[in-house]
Image (cartoon, rainbow, N blue to C red; front, side, top):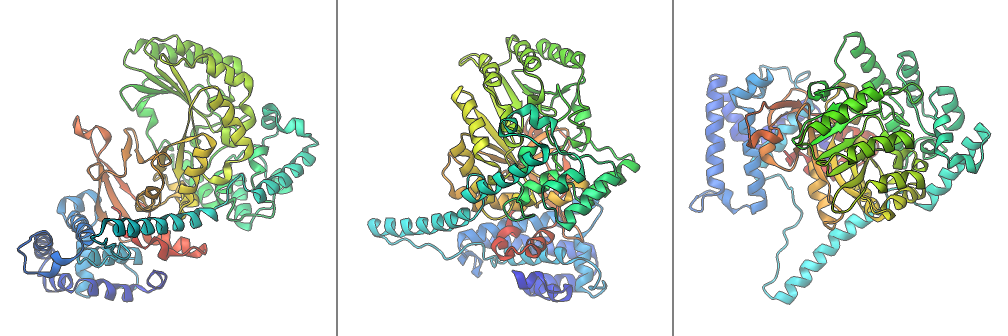
Length: 601
């Protein structure tokens, strides 16, 4: 994989044509794009028939069923790509590019990019049963005892591979990390002239949130790239804020594998800052998820029949760079939603008998004073048709000391088995965030009888092999149930975090699938703007319709309502697989470990 990633476009083109000479012949000898399209369709249809025709005289049916099934999926993708409808939808024709490449009309040197060619190398190999998506074929002996022993040895090999991979991923409870976090904590306490007693007080943490570069530089070592990003944030008026506790999770000697996901969440990069500034100048709507169009009144967002989002606060203890709502978040010292808006929103919920569940989020609602939060919960709990109140919060991750006995008592008071559930939904992104302090906060909530669920945003910084599996295992042991894995969406300013959809699908099939079922309870989803979550494991919910010259896959999503009513589709342009693999390579990861990624659609 590494060698092919570094080939030039001309060499890649040769590999592409070698992968299927018949397609090359069709393209070179076609008299027009329409002629090429017709021949291409006929070739694919003939190939598909022979793969599953027991009377076929071709060798295709002799391939293992795993390769034949993958070939069928690749054929389906190619058919989509060469359809005229999809060319009109995307404003681009991959078939035209392929034909002009084959006929020598296009200058290979500058156009298209290697990511485009790599996609078609994979597809052409795939339709011919040459994907090599599996390792050796497992043949079980006829003897049942021997077969069970062979199978058991194979399962041991799977488990050993996973265990060895997970073992090297840093966790917040590792002794080395705990010691390093303590070292940074002592430095922070010394800087602010504070004590251990101060450290565990949430109010002290909030009062000392770090939001200026000079303080940050005095407390932790920063890389040149991080300093460049912070300088750009200052110039462009883009805020950042980090709790002292979360800052203590930074590696004391500068960025490393253990804290890369932690730093990336709260330190805005130069590219991010420049794109945000540019979008502001161009008056680009930063509401990527289209929440304004799903808000019947201020303070309420509704995308589904029986659940609504209530937003009583517009600030968080710290600002996450990739957050879909960071464009409307305010400083911890300047935020606030009027009580009138909140009261009107609760009345709207009370008057709508179809709402059975409320997700209180924002912002982070656990930043509200106990007394005010209790009033909101009490009002909601008095509504007869409300069965569940979720609280969306990151304080177990960013400010675990906010989980106090007093707060837990307020939550528990409204949690009545058989009548109403109170639960928390949080965002642990990496195993390094699951620290002894976080576990202590979780323990208080769980011992009070309430559940905690996790929604991970699947970003570049936690997408390496087995990182998410390691997170799931650590979460379950800490008392948190994995709930959703969100694919990073297409906000241009967060390109640094984006991962190809194929990678989250690959993670689910090749890593998560080897975990016990109780550990992999999360569902990988794509959150379609304005409409809600689309399951990424379901073919009927999305399809690839085009490959752009840069190697981006264009997906058509069919929202969750598509089987019950007519609803518009949604087109999404993904980050190129080729770019993702090259980035892994630059960061000293081995791209060959991800070689099957091309066959996840």
